[in-house]
Amino acid sequence: MKSSKKLTLHIFIALIAGVLFGWLFPAYAVKMQPLGDIFLRMIKMIIAPLIFATLTVGIAGHGDVKNLGKIGLKTIIYFEIATTVALVLGLVMANILKPGAGFNIDITSVSLAAVEKMQTIPQGHSLTHMFVNAVPVSIVESMAKGDLLQIVVFAIFFALAVCAVGQKARPVLDFLQSTCDIMFKFTEYVMKFAPIGVFGAISATIGQNGVGILTSYAKLIAITYFSLIAFIIIVLVVACKIINIPFMGILKTIKDPALLAFTTASSEAALPKAMSQMEKFGVPKSIVSFVMPLGYTFNLDGSTLYLTLAALFCAQVVGINLSIEQQLMLMFTLMLTSKGIAGVPRVSLVILTGTLASFNLPVAGVAVLLGIDQILDMGRTTVNLIGNCVATAVVARWENEFDHQKMEKFLSYDKKNNQNNISDKII
Image 1 (tube, rainbow, N blue to C red):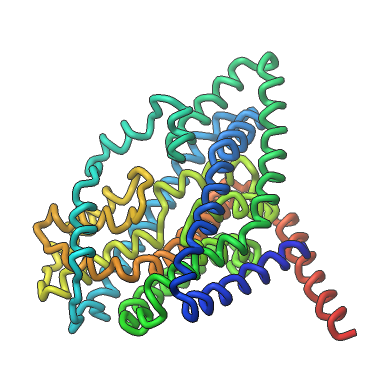
Image 2: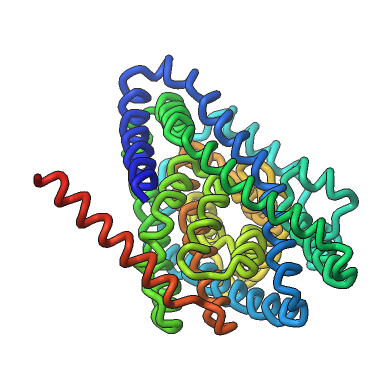
């Protein structure tokens, strides 16, 4: 527990140091980007074996495959409710607060070129494409690409086969259980490099864009973060109230991965640590290892909310007023296009650009968003993580498998440890 608190402190210090270094020495700060890239690559090398091993053990280890379909259905139902509310909230906030009204466009040729490049990235706009793309041609290729949905599909079938083979497959299951233990220890080692990665990513972002970009886009940034916080209160806090699990307890449990998600703007960077923390919180391994990887395809709450907000922003900056019918059609389109898409850089902007083009709306506003996408991505990535952690608790409670005693023990130990730390400092 003490090492966790030290990690939080070190990441926060790295965040502040990165901002100051990027502001004072921008030319050198830009060169720090490789530190962030190396850390993210270290995280990515963990993801595939960790997800495959934990999900297979979670399903086959318990031997209860009958509940898998029921858990999957409940998970998808919750995901759809949460993401639909996020889409609607994004529309409501954009209509009330009008982030694009009175915005002075300053689009460089570089920004326009980047937007045009995004339009060339292929997207799947149908459910058929999404389901076809979910089935891997090669699990090796899926792991190399980091396609979480394909890894989940393969792991489910693999676990079902392990259960069917029975005792003969026991050595394989024991091997994967050992792999789980090794990968979580591996994660601990990699997390020691988190402050260095955070410093590199933040200093490069500030060094490249300058601190002044925060004031230039203050209105859009404020509305985006206000909307994300509103979603947390309206959906996530209420969901926790309904299932009688303290939201602040979850937030306290995942403070390290949440801070990591915010500073790196990478869901992958926070995923391994978040999974282990939710297990400690009382969610069974089988549910954590199933719900969280699936959530990064179907339950990107922060990104989904941002898409509708950004779509109306792009319309408003060029003076286009969309009717309610047009907005609803836009929302339903985004509901499909935001799921099952391949992991590509700036994925939210890629989806946004393609959707705007399909509705014959100008994509000039996307060029405006490019300047601060990293800052906005930090917020929506954090909400994605928190939303998926809450989803694991909701599904576990729905299945009557949530361990309240484990949660209370974990939270009380953390509280006691905090008090001891305060007492030591006073003495």
